[in-house]
Structure formats: structure tokens, C-alpha cells
Figure 1: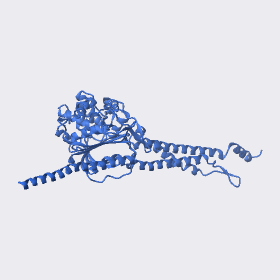
Figure 2: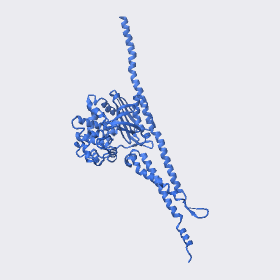
Figure 3: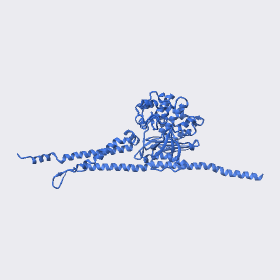
Figure 4: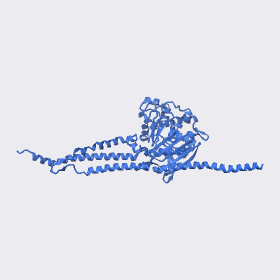
Amino acid sequence: MARRTLRLIAILIIGTLIFPAGIASQPETDAGRFDAIDAFVRDEMDGSNIPGVALAIIEDGKPVHLAGFGTAGDDRDVTPQTPFPIGSLTKSMTALSIMQLVEAGRIDLDAPVQAYLPWFTVADEDAATRITIRHLLNQTSGLSRRTGIELVLEHGDADLEETVRSLATAGLNRPVGESYEYSNANYAVLSLVVQEVSGQPFGDYLEANVFTPLGMESATTSLAVARERGLTDVHRYWFGLPVETALSELPGHEPAFISVEDMATYVTMFLNDGRHGDTHLLSAEGIRQMLTPATNETTKPLLGTEFTFRYGMGWFVGPFGAIDDARWHLGELPSFNAWMVLMPGQDRAVVVLTNADSQLPLPAATGVMSRIPNGIVNLLADEPVPEGMGLQTFYVFFDAVVVTIVALQLAALVRLWRRPLASVHDESGSRERRPLLRFVTPLLWELPLAIGILLGGPMVAGTGWRGTFTSMPDLAVTLLLIASLWLLTATVRVARLVRERRTAHPPAEQASIGRATAPAH
């Protein structure tokens, strides 16, 4: 009996020593992982002069790490509760709303859009009759990326119905249903369908059927309300410096403004098959349909990283960092950047919200914006983070190139302006002119390059000069300055040439030559 008692006491002592240590070791391990992730984020922010970032990590059906870094403006720190603009991350909410109405029997995915918006059309009226709700969800309607960008730039102040009605003149870029092409226009139409079918303004529908059931207290589609709730300032880069800029309401798209804490709740719902506590926002089958790839495979560079993906309903499907089978989406305008990544196989998700963005069409300029979420995903998978140049280093080279080109052009212009007239006296006293080719030849590149920049510069952004100024203001200013200097140099060159020809034989000299050679009477 005594021996059994001693054995029991020994077991209790060993258990007391082992199990608390085992329980304590897991938080220490998590703390170590999250410390490494936070350090990585701070390093990327320092290397790219990013004002503020908010981060959420979800594991095992719940948020396990929420963090804010940097400033939200006006001496405010970014916190997990700071609202950020999320841009096109709202598309998954639009798709969720459509699927809720499908499960309520009020929308048929394969019905034409005109069943819900009888007046809806595009430039090809016959094609418009064949565009279905599913085509819009899967981004296979044929509406182009350019059309979607133009809706933001040219109809940004229009309301939802006005925005969709403006598509009456939009051409399709491919046959209806043939293949994927991302376009904001698809989801603008879907938002209006939600509004028409539900009988509620789209923002009110999201409030009642997504935000409130999930307890997303920061979430709104109203810019004014978001500001009241502490919306972060946002920034565009000017030659490497993040400059605060204004946000647009974009009522024709109604993008949401949400904190990373509430975004964590939102993406967790997808990992939990549409459930939040005892509330079902959508059935497990509805969630499965949203996350199932439905298009052709596409490979394209996106913010410095090459992605291979297909599209579901408001979600891209494909590899993300070290994860082969992820669901993800990007939301951005020139002043902010947002990512959400689902990793269903690992029961894990990541959300990254950034209050600045770079849209210069160069991998070194945009890479950090995709490198941060990729690096976090990789660190969670115990894989190395992607390497790349920070924006500060990139802009050292960019600014140096700009200054060098402008300085060389200014120097050439000054030399041309101060150069003496080409006509000089030679040793015999006769007059000769500098060869004409010396004046004309530089025009062969000065004029074409200047005109090429003025006509082709907007193609960099895929839109006009307005889009280029909005997306990449420093590059737009640089291109216009260089083109203007080339045009000015060409103009001065032509003016000097005209003066040269006039001074080669001035009128008085021509008259004296005429008198000297006139025959005697």
C-alpha cells in the first residue's frame, strides 16, 4: 500500500513538472513565430518607408495574432481596430451577398443579368443578353480590365446605377463566357443586382447581412462614417516619399472600410464553412462554390510577383508563397494596399492592410506590396521569405536616373542657347556656315521621343494621362518634364537654324554684293 502511494505521489510530482512546462511551451513557440513575423514586417516597412500596416493571423478557426505597426496619421498609432480601405477585397463580400440571395431563392446564377436589370446592356446588345450572374462572379463576362479602371477614373462620382448604365457603350474584350479577364465592371453590376433584388441600398445590405451578423463594428461602405471611426490616412509615393492623399467615396463601387480585427472575423467565417458562432451566413456548399476555381488558368506578374491562378467567386485560387493551394485577393488603389489569404489545407488565414501603395510598373517598385503577405505566409510554413529591393533603395536609383536625364537635357539646352551663331569669318575673310546636318540631325530623335512620350506615356497605366497621374504621379511628372525639355530643345534648335540662315547673308550685305556685281552702263 505504501509503495502504491509513493508511486502515485511520484506520478503527481512528475505531472506537475511536465505538463505546466508543456502548456507554457506552446505560447512561447507562438510568441517566437509572431515576433519573427513582426520583425519581418517592420524591416519591410523601414526599407520602403511605409507609414502603417495592420496584420491578422488566423489559425484553427480563430484569430491568434493581431498587430498594428506605424502611424495612421495625426499622431495616431495603427492598431488592430484602425479602419483601413480594403478596395477589391469587397468583391468577395459582393459575391457572398449574391450567394445569400441564391440560397434564399431570389437569384439564379445562370439567369441573364437582364432578368434582374432589364435595361442592362453593353455596346454589343446581343452579347449583353447572354451575360449571366455566374459570368460576372467568375469574371468571364468579356468586360475588360480597362473598362473597369475607367469606371473608377471617369465615373468615380457616379452612383451605382449611373455607373452600370455607363456600360452601355463598353465594348467586350472577348466572347461572353470564353475566358477570364478581371474587371471592376463585373462586380459593379453584381452590387446593383444585390441592391435591386434585396430592395436595399448595397451598403445597407452588407451592413444587415454581413457586417452586423459577424459583429464587424468598424465595417462600413461610407467614407464619412469610416473617418468618424478613425480611418487611417493613406499615401501615394512621390519620388520615394509617402505623401498623404485624399480617398474617394467611389459610390459606383461602394468599397468597404474595415479594421484588420474585423477582417480576421470575416475570413475566419470562410474557414468555418460559413459559420460565425451560432450564425450561418452561408451554407458550407455555398462557401465551397465561392472558393472553387471556375475559369481558365492565368499566369501574370502582379506587384512584383508572378502568380498562376484561376478565379472563383470573389477569390483567386492558386499558389501563394509556400502554399500550393490558397485562396486570396488583392485590393488596392494608388494610396493603399490590402491582401487576404486563405489556406484551407492548413486551417489558416492572413490579412495584411497597408496605408500606402506604389503602382510604378516595375517589379522593384511594387514588389514590397506582395512581398509582405508572401513573406508572412512563408514564415508560417517555416519557409524562407522572398527577397527583394525596398522602395527606398529603388527610389535612390529612380531619382538618380531622373536627375541625370533632366540635367543632361538642361545642359544641352543651355549649350544650344548660348552657342554663337554658326556663321563665322574664315582666315580669307569669306563667310561660311556650319553644316546644316549639325543642326538638323538631333531633331531626328528629339521630336520623335517627345511626341512618343506625350502619346505613349498614358499607355504605361493602361489609361490616359489622368490615370497615369492618379496611379504614379512621380513618373507622370517625370515623363512630362522630359518630353517638354525635348520639345523645347527642338524648338530652340529650329529657331537657331532660322536665325542662322537669315544672318548668313544679311540684307545690307546682299545689297552691296548686288551693287558690286551689277554691270556698268
